[in-house]
Image 1: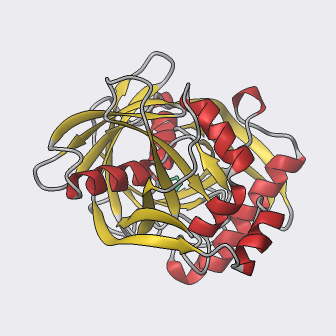
Image 2: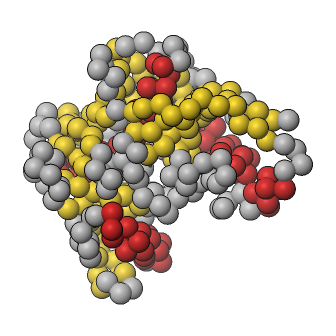
Length: 317
Ligand code: PYC
């Protein structure tokens, strides 16, 4: 019987499942190559680890993989039920908290290798984690697409470790009671971008849609709703989404280097963010907290018909 050892945590409500052992060997070499092998060969197992009955649809996997050199504490591949991710901010916070809790990482600064480049992390004495994310930048400003039932919606396209379409044009308040409307609206934006062939740089699929509005409390600067590739929303304020938003604010001269930006997520949890100037855009720093949920050995019986169903349709649940 196949066994996979995991530690589950959440960062501001968004689940991270760190895969410690038992996942198929994805080979050596650059992490983007291992990411392609994950997408090509492991779809059914990825779905088995990120969907019912073993997981919530929001679950992001952080699959440990050896780093390409000893400068990095570990390598990691992120994936959810929609596919692999380049980077994941809440997932990196969950990963660092988990590795510290099981004695594999101490306090202080470390480098973590991801398929989109190394990120520096800092484990603080109070348990919070800061992530110095990959360089983030705005690719296109004020791009419009026709969204059925909503007319033309205009937003910016930005990179924060994943590709985002970011808009302040929201049909309803970013409140939990409007979740269904917001999911339907952001899914419709995603479809419209695909239909109009609006992409990130180099034709990259824009697989995250971010809405923003004024914060609901006076001690935050903004509130967001982020649709993930899973087609459900991020329960955390989304680390890569916050990075992409900072890149847009910086490009518009609305946030200075070093200034703190307090991002409230759709469920009310917070990240604190700031940036340093980068070469092309900015170097964002995101600070948040994760909490442990479980350490488990997940079992996969070879005659489980569910696995055969997932193997027949490894691209989607
Ligand atoms: O925190 O970057 C993030 C993230 C991406 C998808 C879900 N969370």
